[in-house]
Length: 637
Image (cartoon, rainbow, N blue to C red; front, side):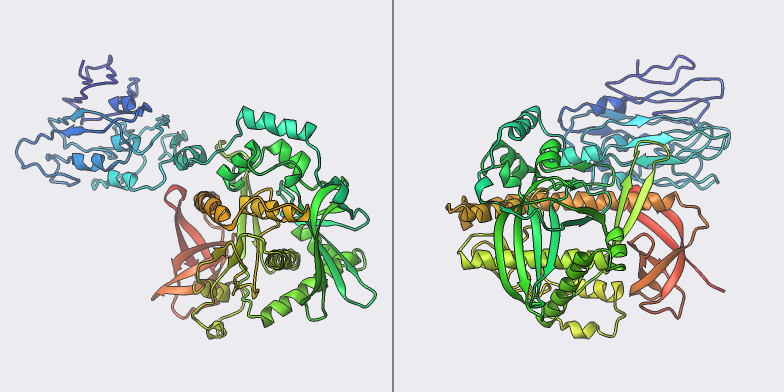
């Protein structure tokens, strides 16, 4: 059989030639319905292309025209003329699959219209272009057609506008497409192209679940490992310890304490989780953590760097439980500079697990938690001191969104906008920066090879932006002038934007592998041992780790963008959003920051508006898969 339309008994030819031909009706490939009484939904031969074998695609395209010369691509020569898709566009694919396919459209009475098209109100139109199956490395496409009149992209009038298949082929993220068609009573169907991060993970070689071997090794560590530093840990269980993080945080690897000395100076402790209690350099768990480089936080799921049970039960800080830590103690001068510091193994008992919101509320009631108030004073001193050293503040709004049930037709969204200027957020940030400065100083004093982070000074004087309103507007302008960060593994280098002569990230060893490397080096020194890695070895490992971190960061960014746009798409059409004008791209078009969402987009704005103005906008159009969001300003009366 050749796949032609013979009436009710249509054939599905999964391999070979596909030669659709219809006498009375226009040619309809792939999926179609030829009448209300007929059940005619055939899956085209392209399904044969969905196997996972990597072979080369070779498509032979033999267009046929009676009276007109063959013209490739998309064109409209009139009602009786042919519109053909040039085969060269299918050859743009990067997926190496071999598919010899002869494509010979033929129509007697009507013009041949490929891909997406409308042939009149009485016809059944549900075709998905062949090229859509060619975009996936792992084509697991679920296509559930159930439409009476119009396909995905269409114009119901006589002028048919087809979406070029090349748009599909230009996508950089070959993710798994699951097309869900929501049934309606003969109304245009809404087709939701769902993002599936699993295919992104496969394509980018990002591991998700841990293997049985890794899980078994983690279980063994929890049951059998001994603490090499048990005799040298300082008992700090008498301190009130605050762990402050976002509400949904699972990995709690830093906490804070503070007291006021008799001379009025402030002493703070930054407690950091101690995963080296369980993990040694070069072990199977360590190698797996290095391969992953970082924990992955997506709106739909979290994939930890360490096996979850080991991280949650062994390494993580838990309220009211004895926890192993590396504690950095700092005494501050009255101007915020460091007077004294120490780095030591410790045991702590976290008192409170607070969100930024609850911590901010307690800061507004200082009589209830005086230690938290002391921490806030220390943070203010540190910020003032860093500003004097040339630090640059760029507070922004960071959106966080969790999707509880992403596979459901109506998923549940939890949107949270983290304001970097929030008092509790500033407190935690300053203490983490202080810890990084101390570790850099400690490493430099003891000739330790560490991942010392730095950032060159910007070529533009920050005072040039003083005319801009403080907050997100000024921050977004300054960030664009900052130079790329650098890492030196032998000695500290200046970090211009932090206003520090040296800085080492140390406070997230459960979720960042470079932080774990710093722990290996410091812990070995505290035990009186030689550091496990030289500067050259650290540099070599960091190269691969940083590459993987960039891949994960890009994935997280694209996933966050997708779900925020999907969230906005689902909002009522009449809903208004507050937007701050950050900058003008060109005359009448500005970059906006949606304040309730923490998301940036561009839109046309009315004449007379200026940078820093707040306007209201509505979502006019949103396509999450394409990263497209069209906003329209709401003109106030």
